[in-house]
Length: 572
Image 1 (tube, rainbow, N blue to C red):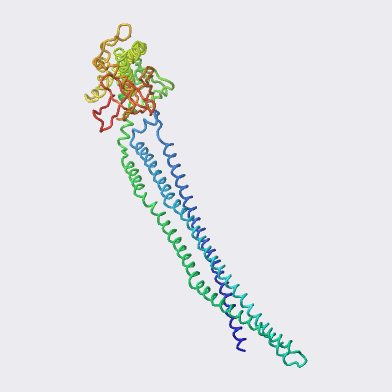
Image 2: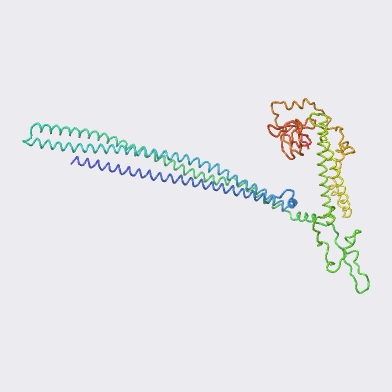
């Protein structure tokens, strides 16, 4: 009975162990599914933030395109419209919308770097850590299962040996009680029973040892290894939860950081709207379209009861507009039409703008005079630059042929003369118009004549001793070109092994074809680097890139030297 109870107790313990092992395995499966779900949630959030960044970029791009679409085109009628405060406010709104779009680009960039990029790297690390923990769990489970199988085998062997020993003992007792059995057979049965009993004892000892080892391994497994693995998995999962919470905070902070700048953009739009001055805009319209006509006087009463010639009073509309010109006759329905509603002639008008009202004509003529004076100044600047270059060629023949610029100088002289004739023609028309208008204030007259006086003095000063009767230029050296530069110094500049440092930048005012050795070609409007300023010879050394550098006429470029450069100045 005692043996049976022990066997039943051992069987019950083994069955409980098996059930618990199965439960632990189920827990590992549950944790594996849950942690995979957590990673899926994290990847879903990363995808959400990524799509948000794409939306921000698309929105910023559309805002920029919208702002660009409504920007005024250069040299178009739209530019003239931006003198009104309302249109200037609209332009400011477009510019602020461009800055507003930039803040949405900042949101996209920050979310990409601080959330999407960081979480993507973290997910990879999380997957590796999760894989390691479950690998350790499976390894521990396999080890305890191996120990369990060894215990089961030991137990079955001990049970088999016990049964064999019982059968051998019973056979021996039967043989010993049988009188017909020889003594030798009884001895053989006794030895066999003793052998089986010894084998049972050995199996019992082995089973006991295996059981103790299994119990120790099982204790370590369920109280040390598995709890440690579960603890690591729990910590990993908690870190994931904390990380996604921090990312959500960052998501909000990225938006919050740009709110002040977006607020400034909106404040500037409000400020631009408040700067709209309806009175000023109305006055600009009045100044732009006022005709200069005097309002018509009263129309005299015509008495048809007396036989007399029907005439229109001197104070009528026709006399108010007549200055020696033929008087328009009003008859029928046209008699009641007043001057503000006279239709304008369509198509291209005459050169002197005589089709416009006096005030409008004066403005157009003044504008034309100003444009011609600017053209004259530009031509004179080019002529001065070529003259300086010719003087340098005369002093330093190795730089180039002085005669090569004569044709261009003659062409510029002819252009200037033609432009001066045009200016005189339009100034004559302008004087004619101003003579018929009410006298303007002295201040307005000084402002309108200021530019013409400056250009006239500039033309006279630049044209002295430069032109011969045939339109070409003399070879007299001007004061600017009296300084001489030895040819050896010029040539040595290109033999330096170390490149000269950049001391500023410059912008090409005109196109220059550098066809001679030591010079460099530049295009109008091109930006280049200055590596040596003008030393008095009329040339500035510039660099386009590491392999292209050379001299250009100083008058052909506008130089911007760095503030810390010695002797910084600007040539215009």
